[in-house]
Image (cartoon, helix red, strand yellow):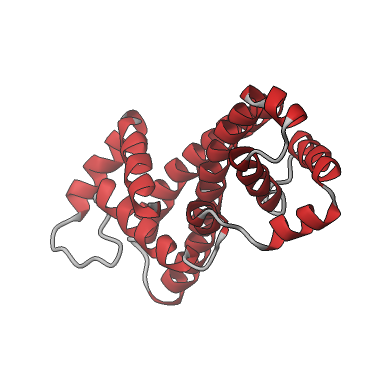
Length: 201
């Protein structure tokens, strides 16, 4: 049940982000034709939108890990009930508890509550404050969002051949042609997703 809810959330977030990215490509193309204070203001707003995409992508990464963790936990349910001190299970439970501070999904919260009840308050509080999986810590950490925003922005411009600051001479014609293909070619969005995935590793 928990895995299916996580997968549903992942699918929904991916669909929303895809729509946002498509709109961002159009917004950036329009922005490249402006200048001065308007350019600065609109660029700042665009970066705010990109930051949301970055944070959502990091959450998707985290949820995808949790789907696997929940399925592994389910496969070890008998061991969990009979031998809850198994090291591999304890490590998995600690990870699930730690991430509960970052994931607001009712079914997941309920699972963590059951695990907390089984292992006790002291175990629960320790798990919340002492993560031991570097990858999970990285996914939950938001310290690199600003740098990722700049990289995402550059990747969007590169993918759609947008000369944001008009640094290339005679680029307007190619921009117009690319604008037409943007509407038709959804493959660019898939290419962007692959680029973004590489940036977050």
